[in-house]
Length: 337
Image 1 (cartoon, one colour):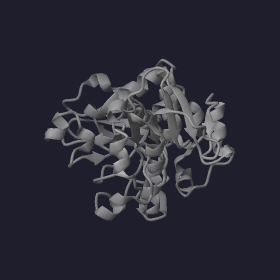
Image 2 (image 1 turned 180 degrees about the horizontal axis):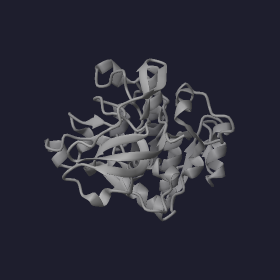
Image 3 (image 1 turned 90 degrees about the horizontal axis):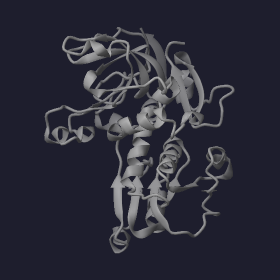
């Protein structure tokens, strides 16, 4: 089969590789759609921290935001999965440690991440082998575009839940990339009053087109009480800004990761009696994201600027937007092209 292989920093090519065979407990999925994530870009450029700690290494096959149809099952897996449209969890825990047994498999010390770490091949390929325990069924109302947005949607939904919002609470989301906009969409669906902070007016246009009229730059941000602040940016100075802006006794959520260390003054955290929550992975939010997409309370499809074939993935990873791409921050890949 064809698969995208990262062979070194800045090097990516489509290769013919061995098609996957379902190991015990696994299925094989024919991939329909894959989202390109910032993590994929960091793996391509060589900036990803896992490449420096040894958790990831080249050659590497990326892709962890995906959907497809089950085409084979191994012995011991229910044949009812055959033909089902599915997506799956990126985080694969060992299944037997204390963290996994407590439902925190996404932080298992021995976890492998599909398309990211410990040599687990990713979905930027025609087929993918994945444990059946990681699968989530996709209803017919969730098309391939939405199916490949379940994983980032699960992350965003977890961030919204962590903010502890009640209906009509005022939320400020820092960042207007994929996660920031998804967070805003899920929070609005839950009844929050959502504001977004972007770098410039150009970056806020998509937010405004999605109906977020309260979209601000740093210079225009109004002085309002923020019941929660979610930092979905990659700017090292914004975690401290989130702490400065949030109402005392409320919550800040950190889901964005900066390329350099960011700092906050923990004295401010304590003296404001603020709860700070970090979010890693969408595992606990995947089912909720699918439900929101299926019932159309959240429509994330405008976030996808273009869908291209596997051969164009290297250009996307290098930062070149496809010809005719829309304003959205997300590019999708159809490996069947």
